[in-house]
Image (cartoon, rainbow, N blue to C red):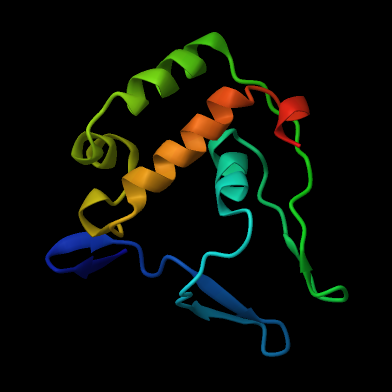
Amino acid sequence: GVCRAGYNAPRFQSACFDMVARTVGPAEFKCKGPAQTCRQCRCMSGGRPAGVYRPGAAQFVVEPWAYSLRGWTIEYFRQVLQLSDAEMLMNTSTSPLVEGPGFAREMRECIGMLLSRPNGDLMF
């Protein structure tokens, strides 16, 4: 990590891949793309990272994945939703002092979606 405003932070939060040069570098995006909450749910439910962009078709595709929330996970998510934004930030982020302003809102959307669809059969 690096130090940003006196706090530890990831080297970069978004990356771009140059397939020809075979390099990776930092990137900044104004928009997080389509189906952001659904894509975040994939990570939160333990789904494996997946490529979502199909260059030949110029489309974003979020494919179904298998998951099932267990009782303790459901209870934990319900408790997290009761936290204030500041508490959520401090208890769920790996870099709470350098997160963007929409962190708690995005987490609430993701957790809410997972609670309303507790298994992969209900996501799509």
